[in-house]
Length: 236
Ligand code: GLP
Image 1 (tube, rainbow, N blue to C red):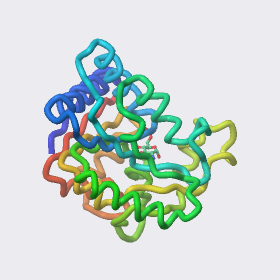
Image 2 (cartoon, protein in one colour):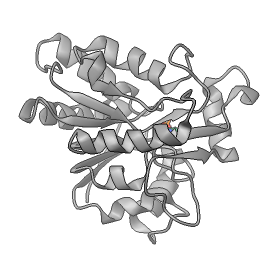
Image 3 (cartoon, protein in one colour):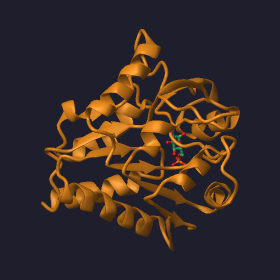
C-alpha cells in the first residue's frame, strides 16, 4: 500500500487527478471505476481543467460507477447519475454510451445487479477504481455487515449513512433507505485502487480500515488485501 498524506483538499485532489490522468494517457480506452460524495469533486474539477487545456482526452475512456440510490432517477439532483453528469461528464469528452451508473429505478433490481456485474466483466474489468470512504468504513454503499458481499446488490443503508448523506437533501426523510452498489469482487478485481479521504473526521476510520483487522464490520478493511492500492489523505 502506498499511503500519501497531504496538507490540503486541493493537494489531495491534484494528486488523485494526476494518477487518473496518467492512467487515461497510458491507456486511453481504460475503464475507470468512479465514485461520488463530496471527496472526489475536486479531483473531477482538476481533471476537467486539464481536459480543457488539451492535456487529456477521454473520447475512448469508459467509466463504471460504484453505486446509486434506489428510487431516484437521473433527473433527480440527488441521484448519483445526476452527480456524475454535473460534476464530471459534462465537463469532459467522455461518450455518454461509455458511462455506466447502476439504474436505481430499474423495475427488476436483481436483474439490474446481475447485468451490472456482467457488463463490468464484458468491459474487461476495472483498470483504476477511485474510492471514497464513509464514516462507518463503507466503500461504494457496502455497509458494515457480518460478511463481505461479493456481487452488485441492493443494500439497506445504515442510519449513520442516511444521517451523513442527509446534508445533501432538503430533509433527512428524503434520503433513500436503499441503494444499489457494486460488491467487493468488482472493486477488488480492479487492477489498481485509489482511495481518497479528506478531513479529521475520516482519520479514525481510515486508520482502522487500513491498519486494523480485516473485517466485514469495516468494509474498507478488505482493501488491505489489494496488491496495488494508493491512499491519499488530507487532514485539513
Ligand atoms: C456515499 C458514497 C460513497 C462515498 C461516501 C463518502 O455514501 N456512496 O461512495 O465514499 O458517501 O462521502 P463523502 O466523500 O461525501 O464523505
